[in-house]
Image (cartoon, rainbow, N blue to C red; front, top):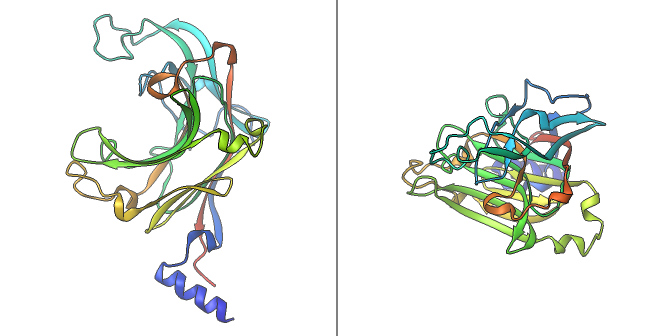
Length: 283
């Protein structure tokens, strides 16, 4: 009885670590249907979007099958409908599309403030693959809106890494302040040589105090919210005291993905579930 009283006091004061709390599932996507993901929840990015990436995003590359959401990157060539011969935009300068993939977001349909986000997934690790699980805020330009990367995978100087990042704004447009942890992929494969064949759970625990990012219960990065205050462009606000929406994507090449292994196609990024929990306050 005494321990429950202590826990209750800590919960009331906001001092109990999220990992020690009980959790209630408040939202989930289990992908148990066949065909396209639920359109009431998911949007699709379209075209060449960011980071000089090689893929053209389109809805056709995302589908549900056998209880999974599958984001499939394909090598296929077709004309770029946004091509403009003298354009200064990197995406419009490309006469053709050489690769396609998908990016799904819950923007405008679902967001959340604080709690636990879990994503169970199996990621592609071939050269050029750049899968990600991340969140963004709304109402301000990037990065003052805030970005949380539960997972990025790509090569750094040719060496594969898994990253866990948090970004916010400074006094320059489109220039982020990053708190980034880069863990060499071998850290995981030394313990499990078949790591890439298995599903893994990426988790964010987010409260008024900090953001904690985990992979299979191993803490990769912890970021105190006392450090995540925007610069002047973000009006010195803290983006992580506002709701964020969810993004799932498989990028290729570009600024960070590296040289693409054409023998690895089609690449499949498989998501078993996406779940959001809130702490149980009562005792």
